[in-house]
Length: 250
Length: 309
Ligand SMILES: Nc1ncnc2c1ncn2[C@@H]1O[C@H](COP(=O)(O)OP(=O)(O)O)[C@@H](O)[C@H]1O
Ligand SMILES: [Mg+2]
Image (cartoon, rainbow over all chains, first blue to last red):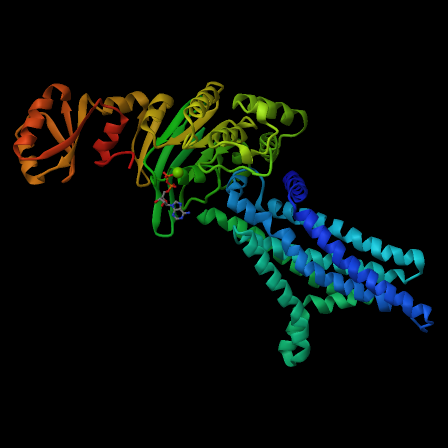
């Protein structure tokens, strides 16, 4: 497991020596900040005009989490695209496979590095929501579950992104496929709502959006956890299999 | 230290390695000599644990590369044919990374990184991003990354292809000094001169098979005392075959309409006689090459074709 740490360090540093981390962070901070402060001023306006029964959790925090969860759908493919694709293009993957490091430790190290960058992005959101606690007193529980849901959603995107990056040596292809797939997973929710019967059930269950909504409402259920974890495990397991299959053809 | 038995590796229907067996010993350089596509890289891939063999076994210091892969891999250093470096890192960072991948850390890693940087002559440019490096410098760095952890077994896949003469000398010296310190070196090449200059023993491979194997001395003896005469031009094949048949102590190794290869004892002295006989057929000889017996002539004798095509 030393090699997990080695790969993590290497990949996490690589984010900061290339433009990736800065571009993704800047885009995230600008977009989420724009949304947050827009909604924030609308909310302040509303409550100053004596809007009764205004609930900051209901009116501001839930839409914020929801919007951020959509933003990362666009941004995380940029974070995961290079992880294995670049390694394949440079020919370093084949040499890594001759070292004592196992395929799974390579996958895990890269997964955690991307998760690390995602955690840095989330700090921006912590500041946003933190401001609300300075000026008011929102309910803490839905905030915590919201962050947990956001983090798990990001982890699913990253795990699948790692898998897709392992399939190609072209970063752009990896990003494009990741993005399309995430969008599809998200849209299942609406399509599922429009249809009925067992197909609808499957779509609704597979979609990330429905499970995320529970977290936003402050509801923690083990079935949602299992759902997210299965996606993460599937992504990481799949990536390990793909990297292993390199041994047969190379 | 390396023990390869009846190794077979296929890519789909292509049999890239077809029943290869050999042993390589500590403190010596074992060569795999063969033309492009002979299966050298595939053999190295199977020994290094990158590729799964379809049949046969590979042992590294007694550890089976499939059954006990982690133990076997710890003893190995691999320098791949294609340069495999991180373009965004400096030379020092690249070496440190590969050292780390083999479990080095702390002061040991720092000491070894400094040592190999000096060995490959990159110490004064170690901090530059390697994007600016020349091909020869990258080759030397690629080499450094493979020896940073002082492996007991070193696999080198054509480490001098495409380098400047100076880097080539540097790399060949490094290979020799690795063997002198007790490392078992497996060296693949398609340069006959390199194999002759470097290797203690050798397997000549072609089409995935070992066609000759032994110590350098044994192989030199097998090349006999005959010289090789190669003619390029325009030839009437049946006519020439008949003419040469009448001459004593001459063997046609290979004959085409544009090229003939002949083995003959004392080839230099017999040149007028042979050229005369061929000339009588009305052949148009454009180029003649006479070469001393060497590994190349052994390869030509065994396969009927040249090593470098
Ligand atoms: N990834 C691959 N897929 C299919 N065929 C391959 C692959 N790699 C090598 N080969 C084939 O296997 C044979 C041996 O190749 P290789 O081991 O690279 O030879 P060498 O290193 O001696 O030049 C060649 O015929 C080559 O075309
Ligand atoms: Mg090769």
